[in-house]
Image 1 (cartoon, rainbow, N blue to C red):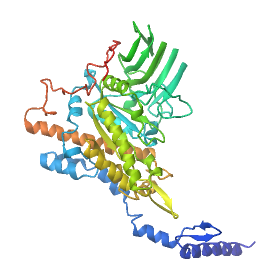
Image 2 (image 1 turned 90 degrees about the vertical axis):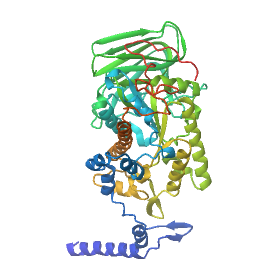
Image 3 (image 1 turned 90 degrees about the horizontal axis):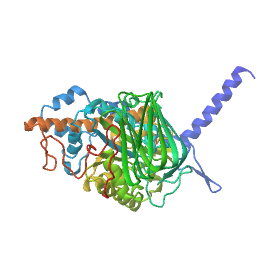
Length: 514
């Protein structure tokens, strides 16, 4: 066929497609009980009228990374700084508009990182957090500010690999999880613990770890110099042995322990790899890979989870875990997985009720800790051939925010930080892409942006805390009216874990029922 005829053929096809695009009705065409749809001019106009391309992602990113010089000028005045915190879309919204909400956490962070004090932030979420996304960036930024290192707490068996640490497990062991999956079993006692899962060691087992070589791993996550094991229900003479590089240390429990125990080894320096060997029987709730002190963020991503599962976990056990781990802040990042089941205002109310039960649960098991809810990100789906924000997502986000603030829980509005309705389309089309092709999940770059913005929201509140101390002239900020002489926080439990975590191989005594 001659080139001219080939060109004519293609031009004819394009002309037919253009006519279809221009005249095809947005509602589709009914044929034999089926609705045929085709991208059309009317739908495209609808996208433009609704601001489908109006979200300027670069402007959103600039706002997320507020000019540091401008922020420094704001810090000269309490009133100006407070107004910034209240008006900036990227700020944490505080219950009762109380800027002292996180003071107990900040007071715990006042101890120098070389004191051996590790303040833990438990970051629970869905698949947006898988592979240590968002949490890893949040951890890195907070550790740069407050000290600390290591990837934090990990389960003995990691269901989905993390970029922040390489790990493995073997021996006579079994995994139990409060969220059903093909690799886990059900525990009738609900002893799932702080990581919503545990590993039963039956006679013997091993856990191995090594410094991550993944390109996405953050630098501080690679520095491990402190190893802890959180476990319970152990048999007599339960033995734990840690081998790191050329170092070997062993601890033996004299008798069986029914509650939760913690064994910690503080090492002389960062290690490349290590092996934990267990002899006897026990339930391992988590293994902490930290630095000598400072802050850490523990990532617990549960794929497909809507966040309403924590009340399934034995509250006495969870309280022991939380106290021994030294948890100062609980972050719950949920909402997205609830959307497919939400088709009415009543469904939103029922879901928000279930989430309030989870918040109340954490208040019970860790009354000294603060709770921060991170709302759902924008998500898009195809409706009549057009990508739009999931129906009722904005209503769900607002309902979660209202309920959290009403019940003493802080809120960080991911949806509005991204730019609001339809913003995920802009995040996906951005160069480089910040959203994935499913228009639901962030790419690794997008997750970094969210993690860094969340870290900035926390550190901005800390800066305001420091300014209030400076203005008061006392160097101290009252927390619930109580400040001890050494500046430590008085509370129902140690936000930092100080006095609970063993050091240099000492074994913590069993914690009484909470």
